[in-house]
Length: 493
View 1 (cartoon, rainbow, N blue to C red):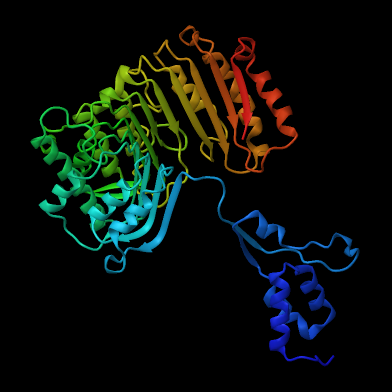
View 2 (view 1 turned 45 degrees about the horizontal axis):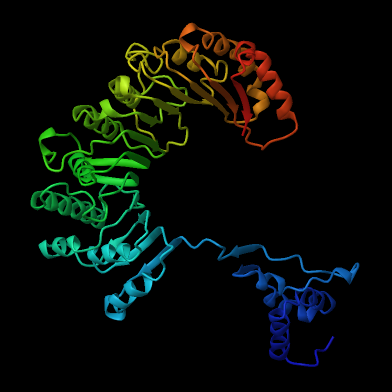
């Protein structure tokens, strides 16, 4: 077939059809005429972004086309917008000081009074003070996340600290720091930021009469999330905590390591000192941080006695929940040291730890096969996650029974156990069913008479199906004592 127009004309026509949303027409033109097919396909977007409902409605759908060929739609769709007006995300950006009027930018941003969350990802700023002014532009900000934020001008000086003290007071509650760093050395900008936070806090405490609370950006922060962080030393970590007086919880995710091992109690500044209300510690480590860093972290909490005030701990022991690695011994030391202050313990065995160099213990080296909770006599809630692996698939309930058998708290009210088979659930189902009556027996002991709820869960990697209801009935049949007390819940997720 000889085309009556040159390709440039057809391309112009087809682009007009695409603008009008006539995608079915474009598809049919490409089918009817082989020469037109490449041009039509060029105008049929494989990746589409919609910013409003009107843009979606613009696409014309020919339901009356019968058997005629229709457009199958794009491969990838990205939707921007929505009715959320409380968050601002800045990604992969550089602030060129010479190109922007900072005062005008901050004045314009201050108009967005509804912003409560600010997320900066891979952003380069002129100075630390620029970051401070950016944060303070949002008077209602509650959450700040800094992922791989860098500064052009380093290091800060005394003038920067003085100017920071002039920034307005904030009610920031959650601070997240992530360097996206997979190396073994701390990034200069992260060290700069931590040093600045520490310097400002220490300077204010020395010169301010009375209670210094609420006089700098981070003074009201209650939750600190650290992810993929390399600290120069434990001392740097300690100074960061001392700089956040209202801190109540810490979450360490993915990895957290210390370049220089060891910890000296004398490095902790007397003023302002460690946060007195720190009660929550969550370790969700997925990369191998090394036994030395785990030991240093535990030693820090024990030596400073912060461990004695912890009420909520989440740690990632070995997949089997047994004490089989050197780091398990250290983590169990922290649990024991928390003693009667501990109310909630979550042992979430992580099998996603990569490149682990942790040393495995011989049977004779382990102080106990199980995590010892005998010192936690006021424990109220216990969450256990067991990965059904080659070492536990024949007895997946045994580590749970071991731990529960040594509980000494009569205040236990809630227990949740989640089993995660690595492969097909059917292959591990029989061994799980055989072991559940042991859990039923242990939880019927007098020490557990105050239990209000027990949850037994199973992870199904293939998604939920109609057979899960039958499996739930089978689980209940293996736990008759708990079921009779009316406190049993069986879930599949």
